[in-house]
Amino acid sequence: MNLKELIHNIKFDLLRYTYGSSDTFTLSLFFKGLAHLGFWAVLNYRIGRYMRLKTKNKIIWAITGLNKIIIEILTGISIPYSCNILSGILIGHFSNIMIAGNVQIGTNCTLHQGVTIGLAGREEKKGVPIIGDDVFVGAGAVILGKIKVGNAVAVGSNAVITDDVPDNAVVVGQKAEIISYKGSKGL
Image (cartoon, rainbow, N blue to C red):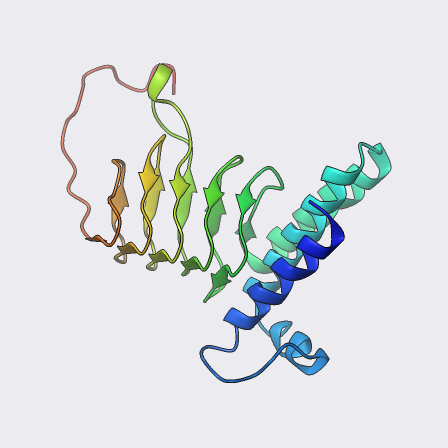
């Protein structure tokens, strides 16, 4: 990633916070974006990831690590620098958003409060999700495991997703069922 890509990503992230208005990228729009705690977390992720990709300097890594902790405390949003999130992410409401390391998220993804995108599974099925472009994730939704969520998918509030989801699908619900008797050992 170079500086031009960083600025491009931040610009398109920020434009999502106009919520459809005709605002263009200006300094005043940047300051309006700072009124959204979700944008704080995204901005910290973008800058921290850029700095960590550019250097292995332990001081820089310590500073970005400290910044991540501060942002998590202030916003309740955890975005590890190891994630690969493309431009245009919108965190519509702050708080209780947890994203596992190495998660991949496509362009123009919208996350609402209480969303968890995390690691799950055992052995060869253990991993994190890959989320496509133009995905909407409702409040309280959980997306877990080595799965793929297609493009233009809408995930309903409080849905629990543990299997692949094809493009253009709308998924809801949280049906719990016994899937094995291996218990919690090894998790």
